[in-house]
Image 1: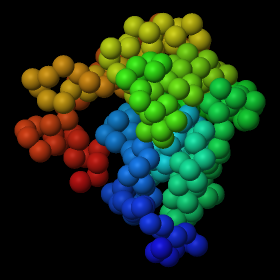
Image 2 (image 1 turned 180 degrees about the vertical axis):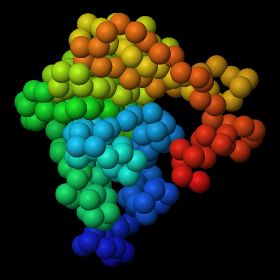
Image 3 (image 1 turned 120 degrees about the vertical axis):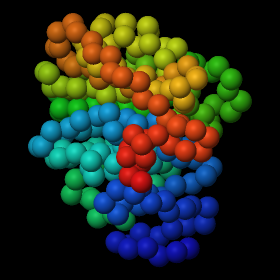
Image 4 (image 1 turned 135 degrees about the vertical axis):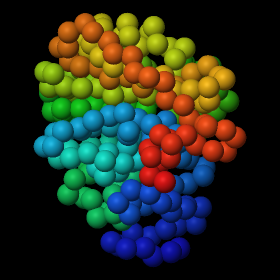
Length: 250
């Protein structure tokens, strides 16, 4: 065990990673789902105004509330997570960084979020949801990493239905997902009263097809979709593009 600050301890099997933003650190475990590039990209795509309240549905170890608290002028950043161990990691990272006055971690089920927080409680919803449908390719549905990657505890439909309940009129949804589900994403957004307003495709490099998509939707928005220029990750092997370096804080 390694004592840190703010009465937080690092336990065996855990590591402390530098987020390269405002001196922020995050506690992670290799046997659970560690944050990846998609969370970093989403934190750069989302925008939150001064005084606005945000919730991250399926926060995992709290990476998005941490990054967005550093990158935006939002008032509060709430993370909702169903897995107790992940929620506990997130809460300890918040305490470690001295952000308990701005970031709040709650353990709970996304499907019950409207009952937990109340309708129209947030200006912004962000989410990095499970990408894979159902039990496709699953070997252990109780595994923490499987729950993060597969729609075991909630579906895309659940997330968008609940997002609509949580958002105020004119509120915004920011999501990262896979391009192969774009048709379904747009359909479910529209069915739940969230108008797609902005989209950006992410390409590993200029020779490959996109493997991620960033989407912004708005409650009560008028039909008009802006497709932004592609985001390219790698300039060459093991070398990020300038934009990616900026997003990571290098």
